[in-house]
Structure formats: C-alpha cells, structure tokens
Image (cartoon, rainbow over all chains, first blue to last red; front, side, top):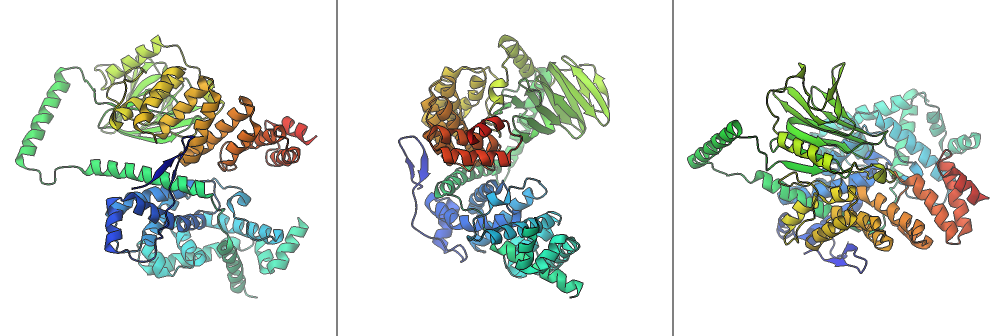
Amino acid sequence: MLMVVRSPNNSAWIEPLSASFDTRRRLDERTLELLREGDRKTVESALRALFPEIRARLFRLLGPRAELDDAVQETLIEVTRALPKFEGRASLATLANRIAVRVAFRYYGKVNPVELDEGLASSGDDPEERVSQRQTLDKLYRCLDKLSPKRRVAFVLCAIDGLTPAEAAEIEEVPSLIIRARLMQARSEVSRLMRGDPYAEVLLRGREGIAEERGNE
Amino acid sequence: MTQKTKDERVLNELIRSAKHAEPGAPTSAQRDAQIFQAMLEGERRIQRDVSKTRLPSRPTWHYFFGAFALAAAALLAFKFAWPSLSHAEIVSLATGDRVTRTPNSDVVFARVTEESRIISVHAGEALFDVVPLLADASFVVETDELEVSVRGTIFTVSREDSTSLVHVFEGRVEVREGMALTMVEAGQRYASGHGLVAIDSPVALQREGEAARLARERRPHVAPAETAAEPATELAVTETVTEPVAATLPEPLTSPRQAGEARVDLQALVASRDFEGALAAAQNVLRVQPLDRGARLVEAQALQGLRRFDAAATAYDSLARTGPPTMRAEAAFRAATLRYRELHDARGSLASLDAVNLAASPYAERALGLRARAQDAAGDADGARQTAARYLALFPEGGMQQAMQALLR
C-alpha cells in the first residue's frame, strides 16, 4: 500500500520508493497484475517512472505554456484510470504517450502562452544562446499554433522528438503512412509560414545572424 | 541557394532549437504532490467508472418485469402526486451558487470561476440558486436553443424534445433566443419557440425552487465582496445530497459516505459567515476523510474568518503543497498574505510564496508585489529593490506601482 506520512503541520507526502520501472519494455505478468489491481506501490512506481517522459512530451507538444502542470496532472490521472484495463500488449510508455497526446489535443486552440523564460529550463550560461533559442522557439510554436492538431502532433513526435513514423503511428493508433503524410504536410506548411518572415533570413545566416539581430535591437 | 534549400535550412534550425529546449524542472515536492493527487483522483474516477458499468450482465425476465413494475409505479407517482425529487442532486460551487438537477439530467459545468460561470443543460432539468454577482461577473446557462444570463436569482432551465423551458422563482433573467432578447421576471415562464407562456403545470423542481426562494427570504443577503478580493479560480466542491436543505451543522460522522453528504453545505456556511459552524463541519469531515481538499480549504477559510491566522496560514500552506494544481497557487498566496499582513512574519510569508510557482498563476502580479514588500520587511533591501524593479518591468500599469517605486527609492 501507499505510505502516506503525516508531518506535524498536517501536510502529506509520499514515501519515496527505490524500485525503478522500465517503461519501455513490456511488463511481466506479475507487475501487470499488480497494476491492474491498483496496487498503490506499483502504480506509484509506474507514475514516478513515467513522470519525466510525460512532462517532456507535453512540453514539446504544447510548447512553453502556463498549463503544462495541469496537462501533466491530467495525463497522470488518466494513466492511473487506464491501468485497470491495461492489457500490456504495448509498453507503459506507449500508453502514457497515447494519453499525453489526447490530453494535448484538448489544449490546442487555447491562447495562453507563458513567458518563454518562465517555461524553459536554463540551458547553459551563454545568454546570447539563450535569447536566440527563445526567439527561435517562439517562432516555431507560433507556426505550430496555425497547424491542424493532427499535423502538429505528427510534426512534434517525428521531427522534434525523433520518433520514427511507425512509433508515432503506434501512439496515434493510425497507419504509419498517415503519419508520414501528416509530417510532410506539416513540414511544408511550417516552411510556407516562415517564407518571407524576416526571422527566416536571420536563421539562414546562422548564429552570427542571430547575434547581429540582437545587436540591431 | 534555391528556395527549397532555404526552406529546409530554416526548418532544420527551428527543429534544432526545439530539440534543445527543456521544460523547467519541478521540485521533488511538486512532483510528489502531482503524483499523489493523480493517484487519488485516478482512483476516484475508477470507482466512478465501475459504478457506472455495474449493470446486470444477463438480464432475465425477472429484471424486465421488475423494471416494468417500477417504471409503472414511478409513472403513477409522477402523475398523481406532487413531483417529488428527494433524490435530486445538489452541486455546491465554490462561488456559493447551488445547482440542483434532476437525476436524469445532463448538465455540464463548462466554466466555473469567480468572474464567469457557464453551465450547459443538454437534457433534464436544473435549478439554479445564484448568489448576487459582482459588477464584472457573469452567470450564463446555455441550452441548444437558448442562452440565459443572470444577476443573482433562482430559476430552473429544462430541456426536453429540443424545447427549452425557463421558469423564474426569484429575481429576473435575460433570455436570448437567436437575436431576440426577453426579460423573464419572477413567476414567469419562457419556452423556446413560443416566448413567454402561461404556467399550466409545476416544473419538476418546483418544490426545490420554492424552498430556495423561501430560504433566501429568511436569510440576509450575502455580499459577494468577501470572495472578490481573492477569487477562487476553480470549481471546488461538487457533492450529492438527498434534500435541498438550508446549511446546518452536521451530526458527528462515522463513515466516508456521511462525510461526503455533510461536505456539501460547508461552502454555504462560509458564505453565510458562520465560521464556527463551518470549522466544526469541516473538521467533522476531515476526521473521516483527512485528505479531503475541499474540506481542508473550508477549514482554512473558517480559521481565517475566526481570526485564527496562524492556524489558517498553516492550513493554506498545507494545501499549497498537497492540493490539486488549481488550488495550490491560491492557497500559497493566501498563506503568504496572512503571514505578512496579520502575523507580521515576513520570512514566513516568503517561504509560503516559494512553495509554488506563482509566476504563471492569476496571482502573479500580487505575489510579486507581496514578495518585494516581504523582502523589505525581512531586511533584504537589495532583494526587495530587485523584485520591485521586476514588478515594474512586468506590470508597468500594476496596482502596486507606487509602492514598488517607493521601494526602489
């Protein structure tokens, strides 16, 4: 059972577990059974193991957003809810990704971007690099906001997350040919949207161009 | 360079940048709280799924006869007696409004915040007991045919066979059907496609509506200003009770089921400023269900109302760490405000603000202003100046502009 420890000021937390979960592999029968029965210790281990991947996946699917934590929470809840019916034919990570994509669909179309600095982890000490990354990311997600959700998901899964069309197709539960088509359409649409954008010239000139752009500002 | 090559290079640069971006890492406490909450909520939903699918797997003739007899009895009771709905469900919203719905109704709470409430009635009937609204707040009930706007009143909306019906018990509502706008007063009824119609029969929730109207006449008007300063951002309490009774103190509880039934009136007790009653009732629920976040919030609000600020701040802090994401920012901000204003504990206030990332919440501006003042009060003049400068940069038209400029000086 889950160990809930109560502190003197009445706050509760979960006792940390050492057991690790390989979410990429198919689960053995015993673990599967425990998950289906809702054994709290096993469910908790699974959620802990899935947490970083779910968070990273949703971050890429949604972009830096104020609702990232809400989306992660929703996905974790839905994963917990799906476990009693989980047959173990796919890996736990596939199940979680499938749910994360469905949750992400609910957030598309909502305009609520967060300041990019707030949503991003500080990557490196170079402020120039940081600023250019922020600007580029801003451009990309502005383009993605104009794509249809299905194309957007295909683009994020394959182009950004580096999944193969077959892997993305397993998550989306469609034939891989459809994912390939959506990816091609998404790529050409992003290219079309960037055509004529002054920032595209900056990107073409590479880092020097970005530094120059900053200097002009 | 051809256009195609240019496009490819731009696209690759964009993708390269996205691949390197990482989300800000949550603290381990935030991660634990999210997992903990997800498990609790997930289990609750599993229970709900199970209870929905608990139907006889192989219906026999006995079941059919039984069902037929029951249906006939229900029909007779409905035809010859007053339409009694002792099993009607009441939903108490965090905003103080109460929605009573018939068991077969399909009501969707699309949005419930202090500023705006949007509720859809797709089928069945629902009675709305709406607290007086703030000047900039709205309460809208939608059906496929109508849109009903309210400013503090009691009315029902029902929908059957693509016809929507609005019956007003108290106050008045504005009904929009297509381009036409009609004001429906107390005692009047509006039907989609017909406009104002004669009242020929009681609505299903007639008794409940009359009871709510009488209860409102007996109790003094509750000014909404108490909650306006620090808005509750989400639907906080949704529970089922058997009768729409006025808020009363529950008996000592022994089971989670009883706790669930008692919890419904907690918000009503807070709204009517009966803080002693609310505290006793919330603690009663918490004795049976110690992890009930709704009751914990009411406990904190009641303690604040009773001016037991230290205990209230501790309760809010606890919620900020373990509550659902939608409640955490509000709880942390309330705890920090109490510690700064009432307990004069600037360091404690800063600790409360640190518990949650408030930058992306509706409290971002006020939290930043509070942080600057708390830092100043705690003797961290440099930190206070930096925070004040950040406030002015982020919120140049902010309400605490003068206080921040004073800190900079």
